[in-house]
Length: 264
Length: 372
Image 1 (cartoon, chains in turn green, blue):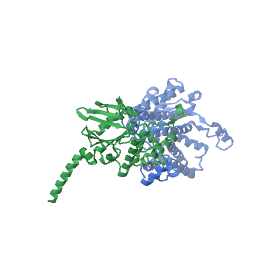
Image 2: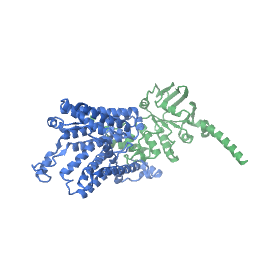
Image 3: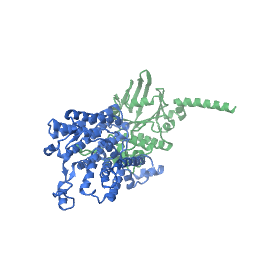
Image 4: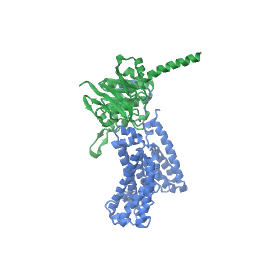
């Protein structure tokens, strides 16, 4: 048995004649941030859905803490400690921080039919947890709608951790955020990993991924271009390996050409 | 909250550390508008009609009873609206429940309590049908329950005429007296208090010495009890959190394991059952069922819920607000008789009030959800 929290070995997924994923392999260790990079259409979404139990892989195996597993539903994945925070975050902006934090998993008190939602306990847990990540929720009954995008992202991640996530799959957590907000979220992700979680960070932004990632898997047209450790990979090389990199090189050449024509 | 995290936040952003006063918290409550509206209405009638007997024991019971009738269905409609759906079939359900009580009791010789239970089981069926149709088809509940509005009203009329040859079923009053459960919907509460107040000469008496207002009508008790129960559900139970979640963001709620479909179906059953409580109160009080009973009540219930702070888009609102919305409605509709104003103007008032409420609610929602 290795020290991998989760292994995804040779995962393939087909939709009819379309090969969405082919032979993708990823290993996630404790405390590791694995960045999954790829341009639009590279198969990131399909991979996330396969990892989180929405799709069943057509080939390959999933090994969780040394045991071979099949996810029949997202619930199965969740029960194994693999939590996915999607882009929509599953937060209701009209509801309070506390009510969102415990949505669907409310702490209860009392007996039988008189069981009630333990609002006091929920409030104190929510503000404690948010405090830990540097978001001061003075009033945990304030609506999530009043929070910034970064704070919402942190809330969603914090909720997943609180409810027992061992591996976090984060889908483009920084894509809708400004520079400052993105750095707050990235800092939190690093902190989460250092406390022993495995993180799969999905992004198409190399500048967000490179500073925080330990290893990088690059996805291009449904295939993995390999997994690289940070020490073997420069930021430029990483950029170059993404489909976008080549495109950018081409673009540069074309721009030079235009420039030349204009000057003449 | 640790001071450390506060200091970190202080540097990065000040706005979220802004002190929020108690007043501001109150201002963000959904029922605020309806509460303020009720106070205004009472001040208005206190000045205009203070000496006319509107606020005598008898007058008060009168407008409370009208408010209570509407309040019973408005509270259930508010819960459903917070859950993100409408029920336009409430009014028709009232008529339908009425004949479900009257026909078995009068024509089939059932004991009254059995007909009442029969009406409630029909309500559960109708509510379930509404709910399952909305949840399974994904169609807007506006359309599904609009269809149910016509189906139920039509069926009520057709069945009643088929069995009785008329559109009214009288003769229930004699059955109420000996029935083991009918008093739940028809008896007056706290009679002794009113008799006592009458004997002290504090409230108006009839010529035979009994007070004019005999007690608090059952509908008022139902109204208050349902408001308390609904508020408890919303604020203190897991189910309440699920109602907010289902109405606020159906997909998000489902993703974290809220059984959105079950919540919505149960809320539709709730409105149909509330309509049946309304029908019981009315039918047992009047002693007769009428196929047109409850006509347009669904819209009045929605007005009360909206005035009470419910958002038409769901996810926000309160049961107390809806109860106050009903109180405004009942007070004005009865109070207008004590003024010189022509009662024809009542509907104008209703429309204007609803518009003001919606504009106000819209403003409140922006306060609550936007980063200001």
